[in-house]
Image (cartoon, rainbow, N blue to C red; front, side):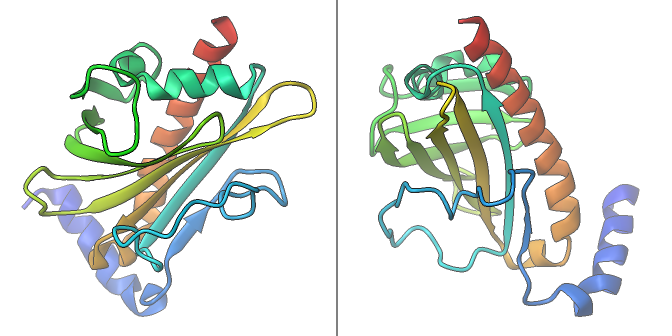
Amino acid sequence: MNPTLRALLVIATTLAPLTAGCATTHSNAPPGVSAAGDSVPLPMRAEVTGSPDVVVERSVDIAAPPERVFAILLDVSAWTRWDPSVTTTRAYAGRPLEVGDRFFQDPGGYAGDARVLDVVPSRALRWKGGNPDGSGVTGVHTFRLIGLANGGTRVIDREEFSKWYLRLIGWATDLGVGSQFERTLAGLKRFAEAS
């Protein structure tokens, strides 16, 4: 077994009694702003659990209108141009994402297929992804966009993970995935503001 993974498992096992039953949630959103607290209700779906094992959330304000930012998010084929963590993408439909579409992505070695659950123009994009064979960790990813008074956009990037053992290492998941989200949002901000 990989020594780093072994060390994480030892730490996780030691901390398990303290974290069992508690999903980890972290957000750098300003007070009063969160994915759950904005005004874009997304439909209830059977494939979205009401109690994910770990939630990771980050946000950024972008000096570009929601319509521009949303168009960038819908263009899977261009994600590698602005997201430093994504090495490969493929939109199977060959067009901007729509509900029901499937796409492939490899964000930082976690390659997998995803299916689009919701597209709310200029407001929200949500998909569910995981390993193509259905094994391993699954996640529901949501980008929410909130129009700001100055004409800009607040983007909230959120992932809800489902796999029991993530509760044991929720802090590590938040640290690793959260830093990836920060790089993604910084890249999106640069790209949208330069467009």
